[in-house]
Amino acid sequence: MDQAARGASALKEGRYAEAVMQYSAAISHSPGAVDYYIKRSTAYQRSSPPDYTAALQDAEIAVNLATQRGKRELIAQAQLRRGIALFGLERYADAGHCFGIVRQLNEKESSLLIWEKKVEGKLKGLEGGTKGKDITVKDVPDVELPSQGVKVREKKDLKMEENIKKTVNESKVDVKAEVVQTPANKIRHEWYQTADHAIIELFAKGVPRNGDKHIVDIENQSVSISFPLVAGSDYNLTFYPLYAPIDVVLSTYDIKSTKIEIKLKKKTPGQKWPSLEGDLPVEEEKDPMKPSAELSETPLRRDPTGLVAHTHEHTPSYPTSSKAGPKNWDKLADDLTKKHKKKAKKEGEGGGVTEDDVEDFDYDDEGDPVNGFFKKLYKDADPDTRRAMMKSYQESNGTALSTNWAEVGKGKVETSPPEGMEAKKWGD
Image (cartoon, one colour):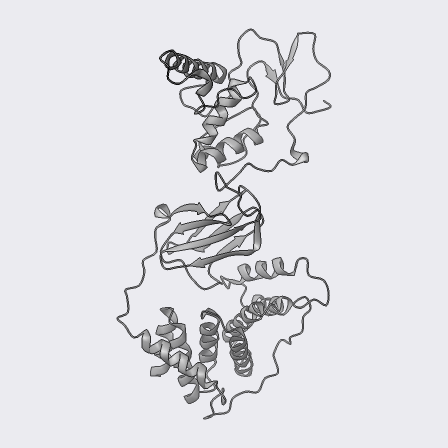
């Protein structure tokens, strides 16, 4: 039928108002066509703003019609649309019940796992009796089915019809070529901030806009993005931990034709974030190893990492991912310190900058130039380098420091004490 074909084309191209109108015309001629109700329910759900009530009505009619015909595949599709509509109406337990039916009929449904996880997340913390907590739906809903030759929506809101037609008329322009999705290696992101928000922009074309094809998970101190790529794999990106906590309820996101824009509401208005991500939170059960109480007769010294070492005349060289071999970080920090102080002194003699005026390099951290050097190194590093430094240092209990995320990201960084040192757990 022409109306159904035009409706399918409009749905595929994201012209949802037109899709609703075309499928409504098709249903008026064939009120028993299950697929038309499923597609119109989909169009209602993806409209802006979505009409979940209308979407649920169509999905429940589709469930009944498909059940009468014994069409297993159509029943699964109708129950999926029904579950998504119920989720949009905040009836989370009912939505989960419908998704359970879908799993029994077609456990390979690609979007099913995403919706089940969404339901699980919403149900956490809800008390019994709270809206959305209890199951109230039947497997096959009690709805009045349309009769042949009679429109399902006999008293359609005329104003809504006029708005739909107006939207369709305004959208009658040359259809643009289908957007080509940005390859994974070309996707990039930036961020900026205002007094109240931190805004992340992920520049990627062709990101699926419907909610069952993408995930943007905003938590108190993290943001995760996931969507399918045309190559068959998924694109995944996580920011954790954020520099400071955010207000999850007031944070939003929007998928546009060329990018995903995520607007994070700062929990502390007016706070300036020097970076999007901050330091990992320290957990007590993951404290570095503490020094051993029982030592050999050889003189010992304690390392800040909690390791115990025999005294040596030379400075230990720490494990490194550099192909050039281990670096003596203490010497490097001292050299940089001397270089900056010498430069400050020289310029101070000419009446210019003095040693006290040198602020661009924090080489002295409470008398420890090494800490100052690493602060400078971390401050000027890109996000991947920071992740590598934090992960390698924490997982190795302070015995290794790497700036190569490609290497560190492959797995856990093992404890590897410097030469002449021995790693011991507290109490050993």
